[in-house]
Image: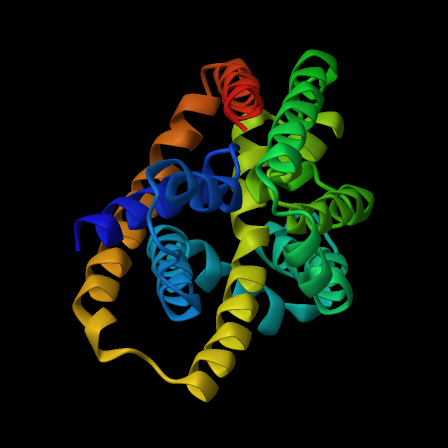
Length: 265
C-alpha cells in the first residue's frame, strides 16, 4: 500500500509537471529495487490522473461541449472561444493518436533504458529553456489558431518517448508559439485528456484479457486516490506558478536528474 500511494503521488505530480511521468515511474522502482506492479496498476494510476484533470477542468469541458454542439456555426469565430478550443483539442489529438497506434509498442520496448531516459530528460530540458527564452509569451487561448494546434499536437506525439514529458513538450511548443506560460500549460492539460482517456481504455482491454490480481485491489485503490488528488493539486498550482514564474526550475531539475541517472547507471 505504501509503494502504491508513493507511485500514485508520483504519477499525479509528474503527469502534469513538465518532468516526465513515464521516466519517474520507470526510475523510482529501478532506484528502490521495487518489483513492477504490473499493467493493471498502471491503468489505475492513469485513471486517477484522468479523474484529477476532469475534476479540475469540468467547467471548461462543459463549456467547450456546448460551444461545439449548440453554436457549431460559429465555432471558428473568436467570439465562441470555448467551441473553437474544443475543436482544436479534437484536431490536436490526432497526431499523438496516430503515433500511439503506430509506434507505442516499439518505443516502450526499445527506449525504456535509464541511460536513454536520462538523455531525453536533459535534451528536452534544454529545449524547454530555449522556448522560455525565445517565446514572447503574449497570446492567450482566444488568440490561438489552427497552426498553433497542429504544432502542439505533433509535439504531443513525441511524448511517447520516455523522458520527454507530455506536458513538458506541449508547453515547450506553446512557448515557441508565443503563448503565455499559463495558457500553454492550460491547453497542454486540456489536450492531454483525450490521449490519457484513450490510453487508459486500450490498456483496460489488455487488463481484462489477463485478469486483475485480487491482492492488488486495495493497493490499486490507494494508488488511484493518491494519483487523482496529487494530479488535481499539480494542475492547480502549476497554472498559478507559471502565471508568475519562469519554467527554469523544471529545466534545472530535469538536467540534474539526468546527470544523476547517468552517473549511477
